[in-house]
Image (cartoon, rainbow, N blue to C red):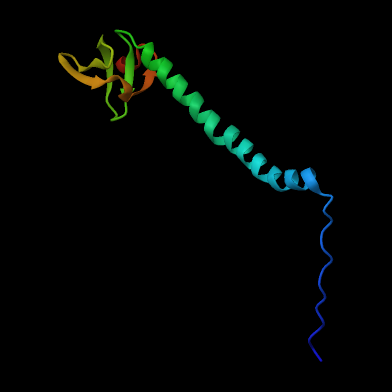
Length: 110
């Protein structure tokens, strides 16, 4: 009385073929393309800029480390740098812990 009859739907046409398969995978492919341009590519760009900055470190540069230390580079080796954090006080740190290269004269203005 209140229940309507349910009828079977006609089977889908078998002519869909390649276009049917492509249309099912297209949203997935588009999602990966968008994710690449929004997440992966910018992260690779930042990593490349960081690597170039670490390679360009030279004596006399003023830097900020990941731990928040500010100082002037007094010696550079392949994997370590010596950072002068105060007059007569030097700290040896890993090169990859440098996060920011400051403009010359920044430490004197602080």
